[in-house]
Amino acid sequence: MRVITLKQPWASLVANGYKIYEFRKMNYSYRGKILIHAGKGIDKEAMNRVKKLNLEYPQSQIVAEVEIEDVIEVDEDFNKYINNLNSIVYGKNKIRGGYAWKLKNIKRIESSKKINGKQGIWYIELEQL
Image 1 (spheres, one colour):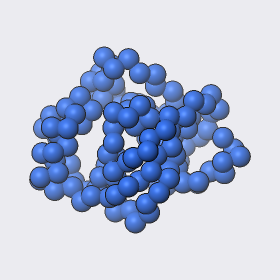
Image 2 (cartoon, rainbow, N blue to C red):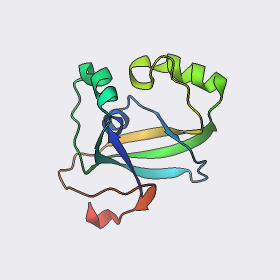
Image 3 (cartoon, rainbow, N blue to C red):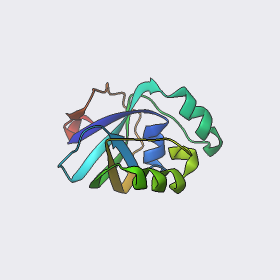
Image 4 (cartoon, rainbow, N blue to C red):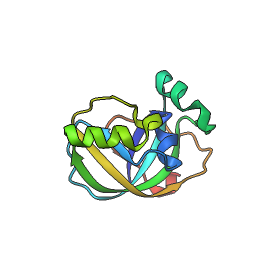
């Protein structure tokens, strides 16, 4: 199954339904299920911004299964929309480029199995989970 590794707190924000758009530089034609892997990396500035959500932030673990519903090219109007959608998660005045992967059917996965992540889209056999 396809997997993408995200830093924390982004992986937990997706797993808990707070973050429904994942931003990437690349357009991605695939639509369907993908696993969210929480990597070893931490975005300290974002962690400070979301600390009041009181989430758990596991590392080196698969934390969710989601579906990529759509991929939207980010323009000025979408930036305005996303900045107003949830300022804690997306920021207030951040200017983004690239593409937003719209996620749906988010299912959190509780697992203690440590798995090393990779850059880009990678694959894992479900038996390994």
